[in-house]
Length: 246
Image (cartoon, rainbow, N blue to C red; front, side):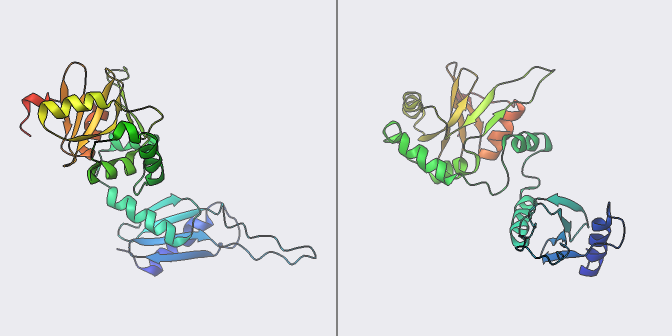
């Protein structure tokens, strides 16, 4: 655990790197998990012309972690905004294994991601196709956080795998396949996305369980969206629904 004074020392050391002469001054915003630091802009020399707008955007910005003292680079946003994002990132640590997290990061996922507007448009666009299907809270939460992501499987011995495409996408939804699944197993589900294997449909039920509806069989992917994403990306085992006690 480091104090504000210790953080200020580290902040000034960071600000001085690559800046010969007197150490630059820093601005520091303190929050519960650490300190947001940026180099302070020098006051512009007075001129006869119109005043220039401040160049706050583009200023290097870091967070000093209060517990470890570790420095991390952040975009030049206001201190409270960075503090909120930092808290979300910390909360997400350990949620996904590093190899899966790398795929998610590359796909555009980040803690606190919110695709509510896109999900609403998708629901309106395909309202006729989705009629009669219950839009469970678990489905909404999954689509709002992961909607529109393309999640490729990790390579195996240099061979690429299949990609999962999470709705909302430009394509439609295969409700005939879903209707057959509901009739056979008595489990109400909602479309979650597609998988290139088959191709097949990914669906989610009210409990958050994820299934893959493939032409060869129906498979159980995971008991929740996080586990399902890990399984899909890592090429994990997906037993047939008929072999699983649900």
